Length: 243
Ligand code: UDP
Image (cartoon, rainbow, N blue to C red; front, side):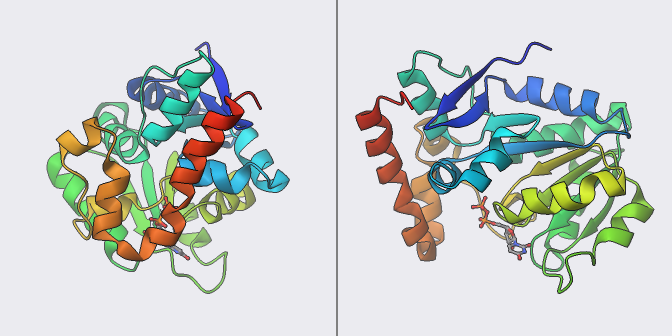
């Protein structure tokens, strides 16, 4: 697959549709001798990474970076290299689970509060009978290596990790290859939504690019973190995203 990429404030992002991301994940999952990190990129992550060389390296070194947020798609357009489609992590996750009914790829969920990843898995198993979610483990472990044995025993091909950025990406970089899990995808708060703990913005709000606003209403404690959004818009406009 020809991977076209562009940069938003110096951070790499691939121009891939959601189904292309899923296809690529399934392809990469074939070769257990490699480990490939997939980043689902949001504007908060760009703001955190643009002046932090280690975070920048973490994202720019990933095998695949897809546009999780509509702000990323918009900013890519200012360079004249507009990404065709938003590929939200949560949707990539669900489509990959769906595809496992036929592909047989084994999928493991790591992260979120105890019980949440399992609940998300239960719901997806009901929705996609025959899907191959082979295990789950919560994300509040004391020792970083705690989930290791659970994952090793389940021997997944694809690991969806919801520990927040950059903890989830760092965890995969540290353990992914030792575990022999060829694909690790950071998916932030996705299990919270898929388990029913949190709901997602209605379709019309998503279409208008207002998912961030809905999230702010549902989780007002995020307001400080979300201040990065208007700052992102200003920075992209004033820099012309030339950096
Ligand atoms: N989380 C976790 N372990 C931690 C910190 C966070 O499992 O030590 C989970 C948290 O419960 C939530 C997810 O990681 O389900 C991160 O959600 P957030 O909305 O912060 O994700 P982001 O905005 O970074 O995508």
